[in-house]
Length: 357
Picture (cartoon, rainbow, N blue to C red):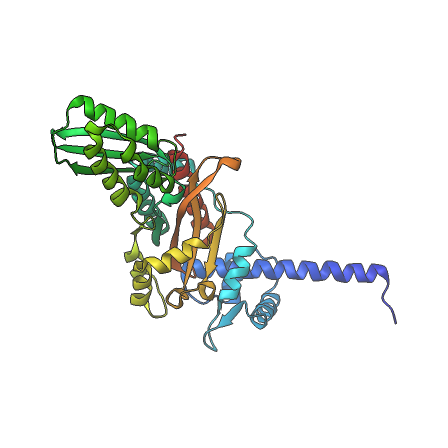
C-alpha cells in the first residue's frame, strides 16, 4: 500500500511542526535552568511559557529530548537539566541575541573612552566585561608582529639621560629611559629624533629591529654613541618583548557560581597564559563570536565551563587587522544570548576607539 502525495506532505508538515515544538521546549528548559539552576519539570514549563500544548505532550517531548541526549534527569523524582549537547543545540539555534539598551551602550562606551592609552582601554574592557556578565574576563594584549611604528619621541630628561616614547599604530605606548655615557645637547637630541623616526616610521616592529641594528654604522660620528644606546634600548626592551601578555578580571565571579568541582583548577588554568592563549587562538575573525561549551574546550580544567570569545582590532573591510582576542569564561549554564551580545559590543567599542572613530 502506497501513501498519497497529499498524505506524505501532511506527515512532513506534522513532523516539521513537532520538531519545531520540541526545539521550543528545549529552549524553554535551557532558559529556565539558566535563570534558576534548578531542574525543570513539565508543570513549570506549562506555567511559565506559552507552549500551547498539553502537559502530556510536553512530557512526551521531554522524553524524546532526553533520548536524544539533549536533557537529562538527575534524580528519579526531579525535572530535567540541559546537557552540554543541549546547550550546543540551544546556542546553534539562537536567532535573536539580546540587544543592549541605549543606556547600556552609552555607559559602556563612556567607560572605555576614559582610557588614557591602549593598555588602559584593554584593562577597562575586561573590568567592564567581568562586571556586566558576572563572569571571568580576559583580553590579550596586541600582537606586536602586526603593529607598525607611528612615532618615536625623544625627550632629554637631563644632559645624560633620554626618555624614548615609542607609539604604534594600534595605540600602544611604551617608554624607556636611556642612560648616556656622554652629554647630549639639544641639537643632537633633535637630530637623533629625526634619524630614529626616518628609520622606524611605518615599519613593523620586526622590520624596525633589523633597521635599527644596521642604523648605527651610517650615523653621524658625533651622535653615534647616543644612537647606539637608543637603538640597543629599543631593540632589547621594546621590539623583543613578548606580545602575548594577558589581562584578566573577575575570576572571583567564578566562586559565586555552582560548578560541580575543580574551581581551584579552573582559576589556576586561567592564570596559565598558555591555556588562555590557546583558547583565544581559536576565536574567529573580527565581527564573529565563538562559543565553546564544556567538553569542546581543549584544556581538561575548563571542561565544566563555557567560553565566549571574539577578536578586537582596527580598520574595516580588507584593511581590517585583528590585534588580539577577548572573552569571558563562566559556567555552562551562562546566559548565552546576553553574554554573546556584551562580548561582541565590548570588542566593537574597543576596535572603534583604537581606530580613533
